[in-house]
Image (cartoon, rainbow, N blue to C red; front, side, top):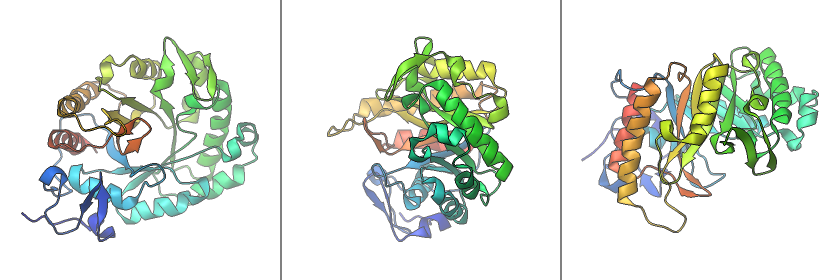
Length: 322
């Protein structure tokens, strides 16, 4: 069986996804599952959010060609998440736009100098990074901050970043990308370099300093979002205090452990969870931001969708997106 690929597939002669080479114009797909056409009829079922992914072949190898291959396989994917340096934002976003995608870019605090950024030391770098970005580009500074610094340190820094970025380019969308792992037992923190704990209120930058609020959320063995206490601690708090769109910036259900083998039972569970999460999120009025799949590797293993049922489940999510 042959498949006609979209123009995104032609960005390169081959694109690698999950260790499989996808060659435009050939019958390739995971486990012999032929990649369907990228643009499919959208459905009314599912949350009305913008769907996308981050695709990598290991840390530091998050390529546009890998995203295009995933788009062909399980799209339509609209937003590509990437982590270029602040100085590289214009180039990275321009490449995404040329390929037909929207961007969500994330950078680390320059030199980890939170005090300096809050004081305006890096204003010119921020202005140069966002000034030319297309309208609707999503961006953040210091994703998963719960793993790095106390809440008040992050808030002070981010409020400055938001103010400078929006003044330089009012058409970009600037928001936070939290780490749900750091939200538990009524407090936030006690993870990574943030060895202390803070109240959730200390992590609220305020609606005047965000266009959206998102979070990175994972479950190694798979757990429904509505039953995940860490996700719910984050979601319920911002659902209560914010009137801005909520979203998921990284989503992972089930990881094959490093050196391990795929588990068909857990893969089937993941497929069911994707559908269950979509149904639950559909009932959340403020979940209108983004929902991005982490289709890549990480410290806990391989999160990529490699089975037909999971791929089909995510295709259904993508078909319901906007």
